[in-house]
Amino acid sequence: MSFFQKLFSRKSQPRQRIRICVECGMPVAEHKDWCSILRTQREYERKAAASQTASREPA
Image (cartoon, rainbow, N blue to C red):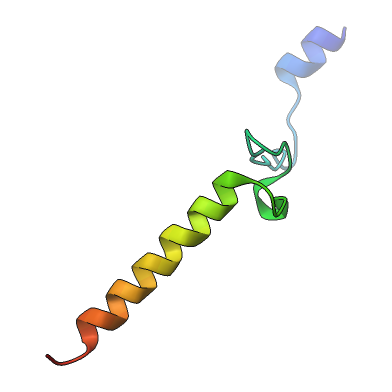
């Protein structure tokens, strides 16, 4: 009977998906400080912000 309930039931809201980091095993919103993926992401964001400020300054 549960097979038919799963097949034909209507759920009010779908489940929220949580992305998990491959390296630290935590949800992406809660990375560990030692996670190299988080460190690389922060470094990339820092470089992007630096290049935007450098391009805005007059030569």
